[in-house]
Image 1 (cartoon, one colour):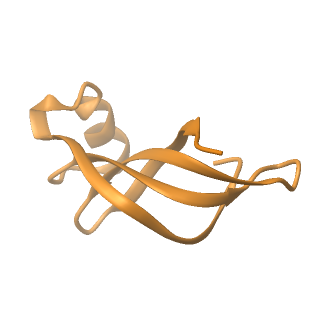
Image 2 (spheres, one colour):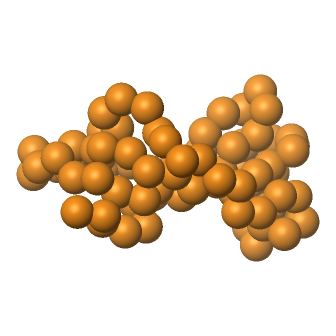
Image 3 (spheres, one colour):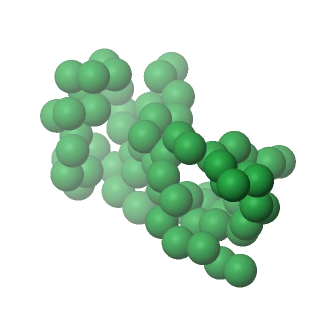
Length: 77
């Protein structure tokens, strides 16, 4: 991640679960087996140039493993 999240992620929604995730085998090889979910949400972030922006984030998450591969999908402001 080349950004820092400020506060909480809001409006969290599940996009895909289990075999519906395209990179499921990659996630299992790199991070371990688990009930993987792809999620999206909205948050305030600080970018490398010190600007604060409201963005839509996408990431993968599994119980006991945590959030992985978080990325900014689009800027909302």
